Image (cartoon, rainbow, N blue to C red; front, side, top):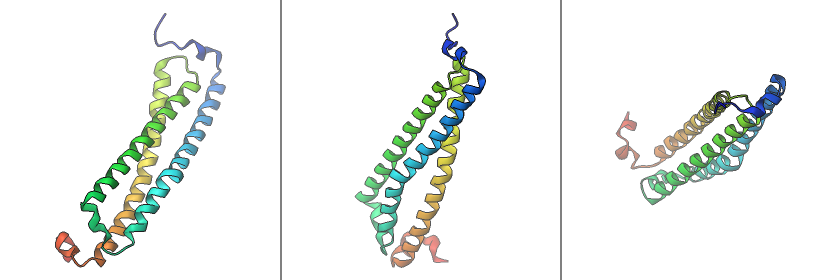
Length: 151
């Protein structure tokens, strides 16, 4: 018996498999939205709330910067693990007839999710860079720390 054959998949029609895949994509999108609202939203709100205070970017070089970086790294890791597991479960639920097809769908779903997440991260990064630039403009020492701002 070949190790890559998934016998349960032979009881499912291609139309049922497509239905499971579409449902899974919808669940994945809802999961990503919930992650963004429940975890990224409060984190972004917190970061933007203290970056609106003039000169507050000075703390990024100290202990606060290490804590912020650690929290951000943990959020990213937890989110990636959650999305990766969701993609694997979705591919499993589609009940393919072999492990190769199941694994391909899992990788495509994860690549799609990571691509969407990267676009969202770039938007957030742009927003935070704009706030940092505004904050540095209010800080009298910023010209000495960032010589490129002197033009």
